[in-house]
Amino acid sequence: MSFKSEINRRRTFGIISHPDAGKTTLTEKLLLFGGAIQEAGAVKSNKIKKGATSDFMEIERQRGISVATSVLAFEYNGIKINILDTPGHKDFAEDTFRTLTAVDSVIVVIDVAKGVEEQTEKLVEVCRMRNIPMIVFINKMDREGKDAFDLLDEVEQKLGLKVVPLSFPIGMGYDFKGIYNIWEKNVNLFSGDSRKDIEETIEISDLASPELDKIVGEKAANTLREEIELVDGIYPQFNKEEYLQGQVQPVFFGSALNNFGVRELLDCFVDIAPKPRAKQSEERLVQPDEDKFSGFVFKIHANMDPNHRNRLAFVKIVSGEFKRNAPYLHVRSNKKVKFSSPNAFFAEKKEIVDISYPGDIVGLQDTGSFKIGDTLTEGEVIHYKGVPSFSPEHFRYINNADPLKSKQLNKGIDQLMDEGVAQLFTLELNGRKVIGTVGALQYEVIQYRLEHEYGAKCTYENLNVFKACWVEPKDKKSDEFKEFLRVKQRFLAKDKRNQLVFLADSQFSLQMTEQKYPNIKFHLTSEFD
Ligand code: G4P
Image (cartoon, rainbow, N blue to C red; front, side, top):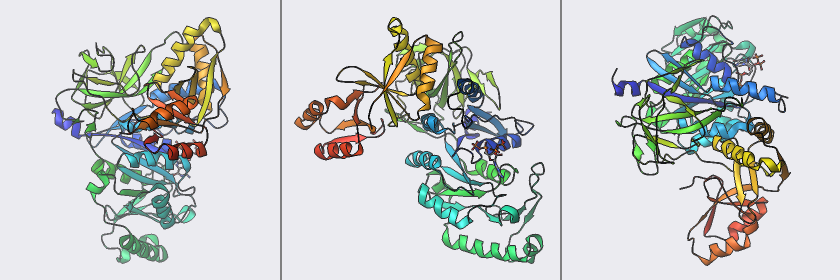
């Protein structure tokens, strides 16, 4: 197969949802269709079970699973599909944000009864900002839930999307009869039997046909006719280009658990979802079909076993072919590196591969030289954009609890930050280190890992910070900026890339500072140009 056909047949995407909406179940059903797994229950959820927040064995076990499920690849109708796993637990949201830099599209799963939930809102916002094409799957139609139109309204309002239903439910919960597939113009009848997939698919080219009354009953048929008329009146026609540009989002209804509506979703997905897309670097736009290889690290996974302190760096291939043992430039260190055993990922296993293509993810053994966001190339100096840090939600000083182990502590902190476990800020005033995290759970993970992997002990001390804001002055030499640096010195820090950060202690103080220094911008993400 030619290089171009290899690119064209790849679809790399992520599934995002609020925990419990059905992401794991849907992933599993997709893998079943691809023949990548043989039975349900094979994909282990990487979510941290409720109430297990302090149980480190559990975290460790989950980390093992999460390597196995980081990338789940399978083939369907000649298309190579790579699903990038995104942790559901909100304390690991930063991991998910980073993974979203490596997907070409996403599927958003929403629970029909719960509607749009908090975590979904945050994740969709990130996708929207980047114009990532999204398909919405409304799950659990076998249960009582919200009215379909109300839910579509909620999706538009809360998520800021412009939806186009490509299927529509016939009844719901106890009365759920199936779905009308607007995309293919047929009715799929629901049997409630997960082994049977769909009971029957009946072509209905004209909804006025009495055939419809026969199969779903007169009442349900009439309701469906009215609803589809409404759908036609309210929502625009589906336009693939608009979807690819992130302007409209097709919606499907189904029940992942019952394997219902999943095949329709998958068939439409392989039809419309984008193949690997061009990616912007600081220097230029890089096309996937360029001859020369380039890629970037979006995730680093460390082994928690102190005897095997190797890490696996996940690299998304942007352009060219990645070849085993070929010399590549690690742009940040300006060093040539070679990889003798790059891993490719399949449903539940990884294997050494000789060659990988744009859209694919390779796992590279790393002894500590990679950082999240690093670029690899065949020699060109380019820096991929789009692995930003967001303002953490929690901030604490980190103190050394064992003076004899300060070297180990610093090394441990450095490496954990490179992995993206949390963010480190060093105060300008006194050089004290502040750890910022998305969730409180990370502090325990860091403390545990520093002790078990690096032999270092730490304690924390609370610090009152509302948000970390990356500072961008219009003019670095202006008196206004100089005054800001002087007056706010106590609140200034450097992040790990040496960028200046203002640690605002309250919303009020952030607003006041913004007003007082109108020529300085305060960003809640590290990437703002
Ligand atoms: P997540 O990865 O998004 O967190 O969700 P997951 O797939 O683990 O699903 C969460 C719960 O919802 C699971 O039940 C799962 O069986 C159920 N579920 C998923 N899809 C459907 C559906 O279409 N209909 C119904 N009725 N339920 C669905 P659980 O009891 O929490 O876990 P389990 O013991 O069944 O694994």
